[in-house]
Each structure stands twice: as C-alpha cells, then as structure tokens.
Amino acid sequence: MKEADLTLIHPPTIYDFRERLGIWSPINDLVPSTPIFEMYPLGFASIASYLERQGFYVKIDNIALKMLCKKNFDVEEHLRKIKTKAVGIDLHWLPHVHGAINLAKIFKKWHPEIPIIFGGLSSSYYYHELMKFDYIDFVIRGDSCELPLLKLLNILENGKDYGKVPNLVYKKSDKIVVNPLSYVPRNLDDFSINYSFFLKGLKSMRSLMDFIPYMNFLDKPIMAVLSCKGCKNNCPTCGGSRFAYRNICRRRNIAFKEPEKIVEDILAISSFKSPCFIIGDLLQISRDYGERILELLKKEDIDIPVIFEFFSPPTRLFLDKLSKSIPDFSIEISPESHDEEIRRLQGRCYTNNELTKMIDTALEKGCNRFDIYFIIGLGHQTWNSVMETVRYCEHLLEKFSNDGRIQPFLSPYAPFLDPGSLAFEHPNKYGFIKHCKTLKDHFDLLETAITWRDLLSYETQYLKRSEIVELTYRSAMKLASIKENYGILTQDEKEKILYQINASRKIIKTVDELRAKGLSSQMIREDLEYLNNRIFCGSSELNWSKIGIKEVLKNFGLSLR
Image 1 (cartoon, rainbow, N blue to C red):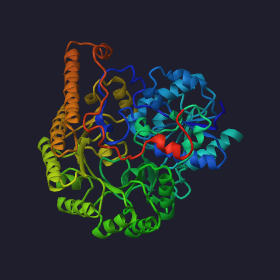
Image 2 (image 1 turned 45 degrees about the vertical axis):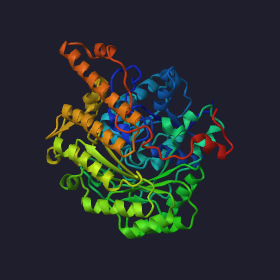
Image 3 (image 1 turned 120 degrees about the vertical axis):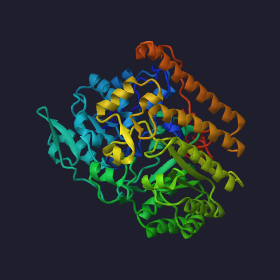
Image 4 (image 1 turned 30 degrees about the vertical axis):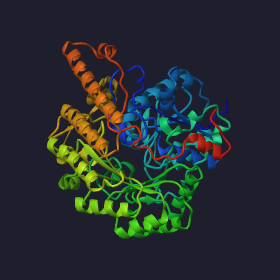
C-alpha cells in the first residue's frame, strides 16, 4: 500500500454507534446520509484536488461509511495499518465531536509520531479546547484549509517553523501557539474540485468505499458545486451566518467562485450523469452574478437535473431565465415556518404571498421539483404554531396539487445549537435555553445519550425537550397522512413511518421507566433494541437521481469491484 502524504479521515457522529442501542437524532432526514452522518464534507474533495495539483498524494478515508457498511470492520486494526505522513480529521459540524476525538485518540495510540490535524467550523470555534488533548497536534482555523495545509505539509517534510503557517494552532514547549488567522481568500477560483478524483483512485484502490461520499450514493448519486463561502444573511440558528463567519473565520465578505468556474464544475458533473446541487443562493452575490451564470449555462447542453437553492424568492424574470438555461431544474427554499413573524426572526424576510407567487411561477416555467423545508424547535415557536405549519403544508399541496411537484418537509432543527451562531452566543435574545457550552459538554452528551431526546443540547422558551420530541412525532404523523392523500407517499410508506414513530415512542417510554428504577445507561442499553431508521421522509422523497453509480462508472469504462 502506497504511503499517503495526507489521509483525510471522516468520523461517525458517535464512535461506538454499533454497540449503542437506542435512537439517534432524526435530523438526517433532510440530507442523503444516515443518522451517523457518513457524508464527508465537500472540503475534503477540494483539499484533495488542490493538494494533488501541488504534487501531493491525498487519500480520503471515510471511516463512518466503512463502519456502517461492514459489520465486522475493525476500526482500530484499520487505523493501525494506515500508511501516511499526516492525518486530517474533520470537525466541521459539532455532532461529529465524539467520533472525531475517539478516532484521533486511537490513531495516535498506534502512530505517536504521525501528526493529527483538525479543521472545520467547529474546530475553528473550539480550537483551544481541542489543543488540550495530547493526541491532537494541530488545528487549522478558518473556512479554507487548502493553502495552510500545503504550507504545513511542506514544513513537516522540510522543517519545523510552524510560525509561518497562517491560521495554524500548534504546541511549542507544551504551550499552545495561535498563529494569526490571516488567510481568508477573497474568491474560490483556485479551489475547483476534481470530480473524477474518486474514479481515478478506483483503478488503484481495492474498493469504491474509499471514495463515495455517503451510503446511498451507489443508488442515488448526487454531486455538489460550492458557489461561495460566507453569507450575507444573519439567520440566528446558523453556524454559517454572516455573524458566525466573521467571528469564527474572520470573513467579512463573501468569497465567491467566478461564473465561468461554476459552469465548468457543472459541466464536469454532467459528464457523470449525476444530479448537481448548487450550494448557496446565486443571487446573494448580485443579480448580475446569477444572471451571468444562467447566460453561460444557456450556451451549454446540460442534460442532468440541477437543483438551485434560494434564500428568498427570486423575481419572475430570473426564474424565466433559469428555465431557459436548464431544461431539468428544481428548487429548494427554507421558509422554516409558515408564521411570517417567526420567519422574520429567523432572518427570512418574505411573505407567504411572495412564496406562493414564486412557486406558481416556478411551476409555470417547468420546475421539475419544488422542495420547501420547515423546522421544529425554533425560537419563539409554539406547539400550535408547528401544527399550523403542518396545515400550511396541506394548503400548499391543495393549491399546487396538479402533478405532485411540490414537496414540503418538516424536521427538528438540530441536536445542537451551532457554536458561534447568534442563538448560541445570545440564546435568551433568540428564544433558546442552552444546556451545553463547551466542547466537553457536547462530547459528554453524545457519550451518555440513549434516545434522541437526550441529544438535544437546547430547548426553547416555549418548548421543552420532551415537547419538541412529541411535537415532532405528532406533526410527522399528520404530514405523512397528508402526503399519502396527495400521492407523495404510498400507503406502505406511510404505515412504515407510523410504525417507526410508535416504536420510537415505546423505546423512549421504556428508557424513562428503566431510569426510574435507577438502572445505569449501560444496563438500559442492554435492554433495548437498536432502531436506526428515518421517521419523517418516505424512502424515495429525497431521490434526485435518474441514474445509479453503476451506470456512471460504465460511462468511464469502469465497474464496481
């Protein structure tokens, strides 16, 4: 096995999830991955592509995915056998803290001489606490690790002057040294992803498992284009808001990719015949920026589904230009609540009338799918408000029920408040009650949790944790029945959702009864059956793909091995 210059390791949320018995948070229901969040960050592909162009050999090692797919996968033995000069572990979103820290500890046990590097938004926020662990050598702060990693790898090879590496945190004589966070790129033009990275590696690796980003990618592939880093909006619960980026990453302006580079990435993805999701609202830079991309796309023959994300309703003119540029386009928008005041407090300042006009125009222009996301557990949100949101979903389906292209979703906000977000820093102001502050607080929550109710690091001024859970169940059951009525779910899919909800309720009730008897967490786990299923979406609701990975590989003369 060839030694890598850098191995990028993606951890599961909970390291010992295969031994845990219980129910994990259902927040994954609106993303392709499972509750273990085995989808590695897009930054891995960007880092690997960038360093590869500089002559480095980089491997992506999706430990979370391997643990999911191989029951007998021995994590410790696998880490022991890794041949690499350095290891990078992502701690971007905080739910990975348990898996990330445990993998770092095990790796360092077998390879004390190999440096371990952490990166990501959560790493950038908790960098000082991370550096107190003996087995973590470096943290790279900020939203762009490519250049700092390049400089660090060169120094590891040729010298030890870590002070020259921007954004780096390291140890010197047992003291933590924090270099200035001075590298904040103004654009993303140097960070195009080599989308053939995993296909090239397939020829020299034993398994596609080293490259696929998430478990269902084999059947439902989708690839993404990152249009920008940073945000102009200040949604209070978002760790990627303008406020959070400024304080965590020192980013004061959005870094965007030039329109020509966006189109290059979409064309690269189209060669795989995979759907393409454009991350970021193209209009948040400017109207001219978004329209320039559409003008360039119009000149190309794009024959794959392209999904556009909007933070607020675009104009009719823009939707008209979009429809003329991409034959197969879909749209996602997140009003979060039907209540316009709650929506405004969440940083989304548009009315229901503006939303329905947008939907009407998009469908008129040929939008293939229109996904609308609503959230449970927002600040200032009440029980009745959430149930009214369910009724609003029914209203939308009734209004636009001609061909089933409207897809409303409702899901809990998240298990943790995002560190660095406005709600995390000022919970009372935004209607939240915060129960976890430090990195250790969140690690301990993941260490001891049995049910997904235990994972919630917050409650709101109107909803306790137990109420968020029960409200989630009730709204999910109601929405499932509504979706069955409008042909979005089959009867079997609806019945499966109801069965899983009832099973989930029963397990939480059992946990409470066992706790009342004074049993330890381990004893309780031994009495439970593991339940690890989605409970909000039908099995096909998030499937954008018209082609499986086998067909994608066939286009390149490759096959699964």
